[in-house]
Length: 149
Image (tube, rainbow, N blue to C red; front, side):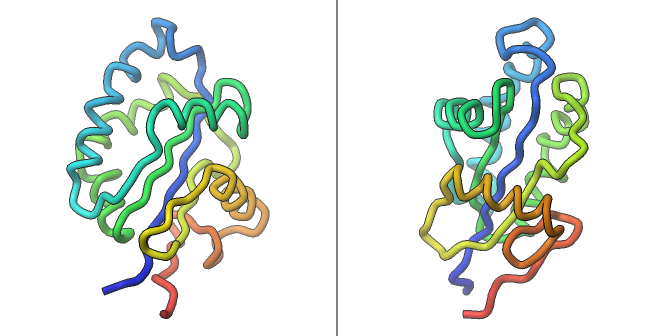
């Protein structure tokens, strides 16, 4: 069994405020998607809504939403993101969020039992944007295996 778990951060720039009619369907789906994630095999932890919004606005700028979670492995995260009802919402993201030209999702391995900070996640995303996928920060397309113990 691995002594590491997979952390992930993804960010998105809202087209309008969360209270706007444009965002209503996205907001209405949040609790359902969070509940599905939390019941998914391999789910470990996620940053809660209040922390997400406060940290996103403070560290990434006004109108930026963040999602950060920890999973047992990359397979579990892929299953949730691409093979659950989460995919329905993911396919509609262009309705609610601006298109981003830079990386907006970053993955990295961290010791089991630790939780990422938003500041660490931001540093990992910046690293991915500057250097591309490395063992320090990577993406789904170019994922790295769990570090040797």
